[in-house]
Image (tube, rainbow, N blue to C red; front, side, top):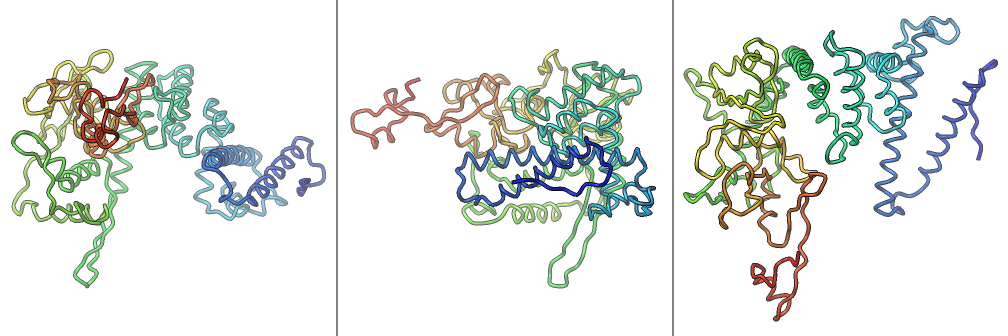
Length: 466
């Protein structure tokens, strides 16, 4: 099979090689598309998807680089090739059948990658990172403080690329764009802590102003006894709303008897019946609305964890962190502190909580807040249920066996994984990578066979031989 492409007279050898190579790649994809997906094994299916994602990234990187070159050459002004386009973005839009807005954004990204950010450009061209991750890295780097040296910026960029590929994370798992955006706010941490504070403050302030401009609410009476609506609100307020709705829609986490044992309300929506998550959230929102005050408003229920020096907070440079894990500007922290609980946290050199209040009833609110500084989600590898959904599990030694209710013995687990942690058929292990995973136990059969083992799994002869 040979590839053929349209070549113009006088095409340079390099251009001919590039066009031929791209044409061959297209033919390869056509041949791959002729293979029935149903004929692939599970491993082959996963490998093919991964390879295609890498190929898509490499192709996008090449297209953006070529677009940036077209901008440098001002191809849009060429009477033969430009077609009297009003700009490179308009020329690209006509060439690709896309919108001018989308091509303008891609053109800016291509220009920045061509002139800066070598580590990101190389990883993108190799297909190791995705375009949404690239946008996060470049956007964060563009907001670097003016006093950051080129060497500091390059080092911070390389570290962020490592997190995007997984090579720079403790678990070896790549960060998706959402998690990478959180890490990008502190990309200068390993380089200069003061620089990281300035950078985070600048990014949070810019994001806040952008979110304020994008905030809206639209309500519509459907005329059939229901209302519909859409809204867009800042991250801070979305996190607070999500936390409140989570508490209202999860009676299992809130309901406990006098001994602290969880109580499940069988009448609650979603318990013992087939109800979708949006329906449960809708019922929680209605309950929230019904309990809004009719005269005046009480103070905010937000608890602000101040994870920086108080002087820095008062100076206005720095960030605070809510119990939900969302980081906000120092200005927002001061505003919330007027009505919310301000909880100062003193951190050690390895971000170890050193100074926290204590309450004695299971793991206290203060202890939950301390654990939220270490974990932003369920501690089981691959589970992204947010920390606010989690219950604190006595993971080293069970409370019923004398385990202490302290930070060293606490681990946040979502409801599903907390049940598995108490299931004798599963063992929660911490790997050398720092990740925690469940493994099915292998039982030794006692006299009486498998049925006796199922009934007596807590006896020594039925326990995992390890």
